[in-house]
Length: 267
Image (cartoon, rainbow, N blue to C red; front, top):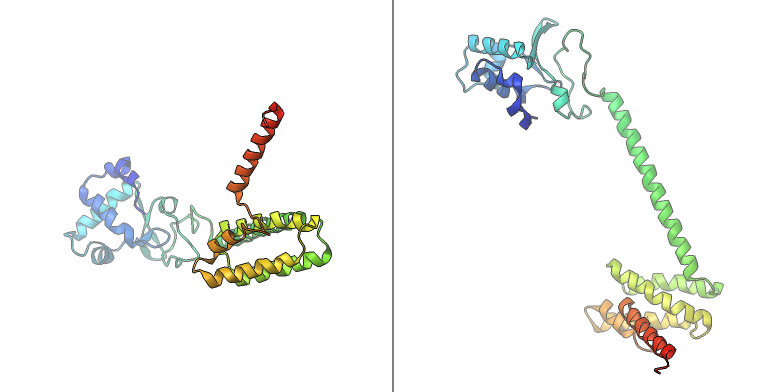
């Protein structure tokens, strides 16, 4: 990938002609995953600059300028003339598992995939990272499940075994009758349950209240196209007396004011 830093490259600026600079730019998209192309006049003229006026001598001269400036490396290997873009792997992120292997030999004394992780090692590292991420995600989910179970145990503390079983079936039955797609609605339902369960434990209500709640949910679905809002409005009445968070805060503030007045002897 061509980066902005090319505008400030001393090597690029030191080239003797704009033709050399242009040829370097035109050859770049044609190189393979290792930054190589054939250093052959017919190939460069036919593939890189087919519509531009580049003679054989001009191409040869430009290649020499680029080689001397350290922007490319010209070499012979396996009977082929090859051109290697210098630091190509340093400035380009190549997925070796998705790119074809280079058909051109590496420069003498240079190891394949120089400047990058060998394909097999990279694949191994990728797999290890995937496994590690999966394990971390599993641990995170496991921690969340444990936390939810802890909260649920605390919520149903004090209920008889029979009432707990009825409570569990109530949740599934309720969500089947009145699905709650929004997290805020599910949170509100749990807030309502947290207000109901202590009243069951105290004996103020019995487990038949679950059936009554289901009935209210069914009636809400029958009466309105927005059953969730209707349901939460209906359960504000007796025997449910549901109060949302804002209403509970208001009640709490009112009670605190009364207590302060009592303390001062106003009431």
